[in-house]
Image 1 (cartoon, rainbow, N blue to C red):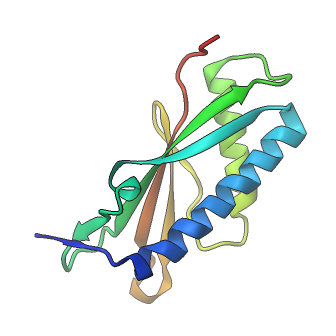
Image 2: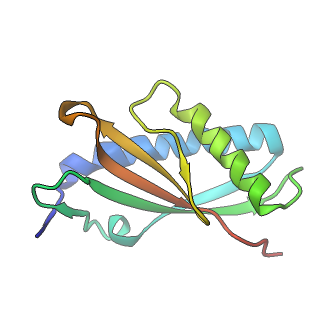
Image 3: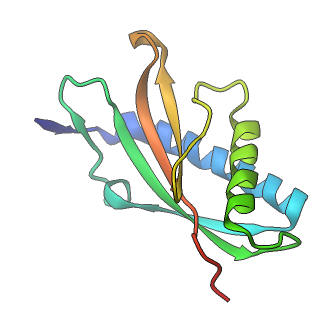
Length: 134
């Protein structure tokens, strides 16, 4: 059975995640001249954040990262993804987040909750474009 997560609980995590994404924006601009926007999508966008009642998997936020200007970065999906992963690693250093994990088109980071033996409190899935649109 699922339950809704109160805004008072998820809002601080969401705000922290967006600060992290803004740090990544700055690094990508400074290193590569690459700019991107981010958009919260899915249940988080609709303020309908849920989790399994009594479960240990937490809740998640999904963001699309929309590249606007490629700067001096030659487009290669793997190069772009690895650059984003490196920027997220830098932004997350010393924080309560796991290292970024990658899949085909997404990067996942987790907020780790200290109280419950390092169980994830929230997952964040960041989706990168898989092809360049000109």
